[in-house]
Image 1: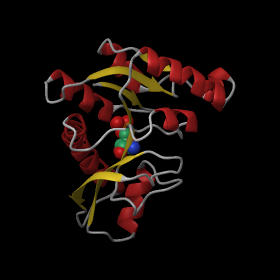
Image 2: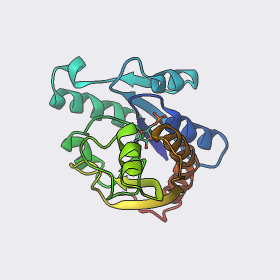
Image 3: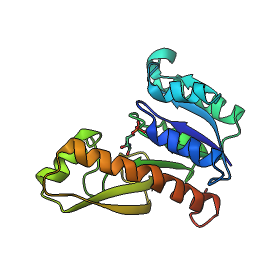
Length: 197
Ligand code: GRF
């Protein structure tokens, strides 16, 4: 199974997937890493692991359509079976969603459908969870469609919100759980329990 990981920033989720492959917890290869951010730690991590890594953005290619064309070429070249969005801050073009129908997944740091949608990313999510006085939050892995955070949920896990949590403390607890959960869920995709395509 060849996985493409798209990531915009730190790439700690990307690293968890890479490590899962290296430790044989995942019968898969991270075949390519793509980032819209040329300075992202995610690209750095990929290079360190000798994984082909590309900085690709609409700005670089002139339009979203041209970016999609280039992305499709890269995905084909690396014979990608599944795309994982791990902290990717952009919408995927409909041509990519069509070509990889039901093969694109995203990880979200809350229990969707709560705390999702436009603007609900990064610390905004955890701040909203604390302001809503939730006692639990979690991690959601869902298929990606043309709207933010609304594709079919394939897996969720809960994480407690503790009384004195700040958004930063809660974010760290959720992210830590993401790293193990990603590997558990991708293993289910590889095993066919969660169906691709
Ligand atoms: C994670 O919290 C993920 O749920 C969200 O973006 C964050 C990525 O973190 N979509 P990192 O860049 O992998 O460290």
